[in-house]
Amino acid sequence: MADPADPSAEQAPSGPMQFVHECWAELQRVEWPDRRQLWTATGVVILVCVVIGVYLSIIDSGLTRVSAWLVRQYANH
Image 1 (tube, helix red, strand yellow):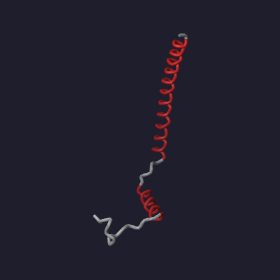
Image 2 (cartoon, rainbow, N blue to C red):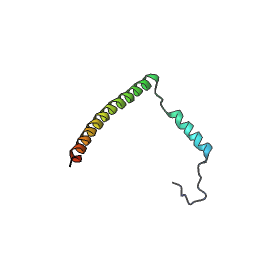
Image 3 (cartoon, rainbow, N blue to C red):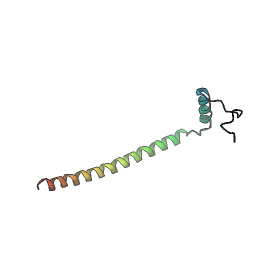
Image 4 (cartoon, one colour):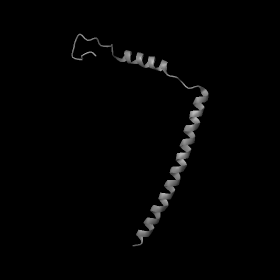
């Protein structure tokens, strides 16, 4: 391991162009999904969003009714 305080230690080139080069090299190694995998994943995301939306809607409706009932109960006193 090179000592960072040692001026004779070699350093890798840096800068914006090196960053772009490394990003491009990393993107070349990515295993991109095919069309079927993409549609399957999209369907799963949409289904999960709908299920969670319905669940949250039911919870919200219940809590709204409970809070309205509590307000009516304590507003009369």
